[in-house]
Amino acid sequence: MSCPNSDSPINISTTANVLSCEIFCAYTHQYKDSACTVTQFPNYLKLSYDATTSAAVTFNKEGYNVREINIYAPSIHTYNGSTADAEMLIIHDGAGKKLIVSLPLVQSNGVASSAKILDEIITKYSSTFDKTKTNDSQLVNVSNYNLENFVPSAPYYFYMGGAPFSPCDGQYSFLVFDKTKSPVTINSATLAKLTGMIAPSGIKAVARSDYYYNASGPNVKPGSGGNKDEIYIECNPAGEDGEILYQTPPPTLIPDMSALSMDNIMKNPYLNVVIGVGLSYMALKMVSKIL
Image 1: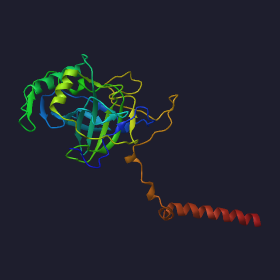
Image 2: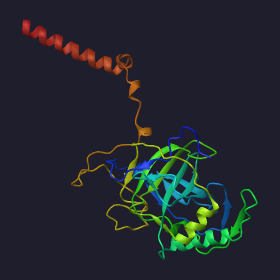
Image 3: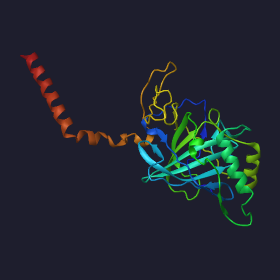
Image 4: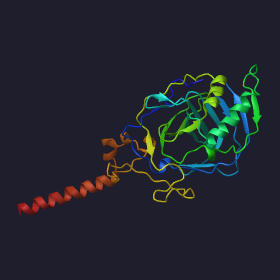
């Protein structure tokens, strides 16, 4: 079920002139192997993921662990106005904060490890789940079930938004990978099995322009040659020649300028001292000219 008046998911325009993000969209990950329990809901599949003692993800210098993974078909985000064949949402919880990493799934009969793992999960589950039961769960024995095999080393978009689905539990940070540059592949036979188990969600993408772009991707320090041992990401708004123009925080970090009213300014004792000194200096200058 979608959340009324939610400002997510959004349409990602890959041709829009969006600002680059710096520290506030840094995403590093060290996911571990996990067991996999699959639960079928009317509009998505939910995959479990084992919690770890240490944070699997660092986003904006804060630790997160995976809560669950939801797979929709077609995608709930749109890319240049079009959906992807499916979408994997990796939902994380942190210290009072929440993060969703969105991976677009595109049909392709390739041999990528992610496609093989998805095929194994969906094929085994589709052959065992009970269609007569509501929200039937099955433990699926799958090898190499590790999100490290799914998250691409590629640019992503960042925005803040409300939960797009039940339980409508507040604000999330969203990291959305680009369908045109870094999709996760899903085999055509696997996609057919997936769409045979779930119906489209009906969640509509929202038109927004307040999103950002991280050209470096996860786990990469600029100039490091893609060394995933590095955990610092830096990206700044730049012109066509690569010159850094300025650094900008997200809207939630911009101070409230309405508080700077003239009344509040005039009540500032330090400002009054400066004004008094200035007026005294001007008076002395005028007297010296008269004399």
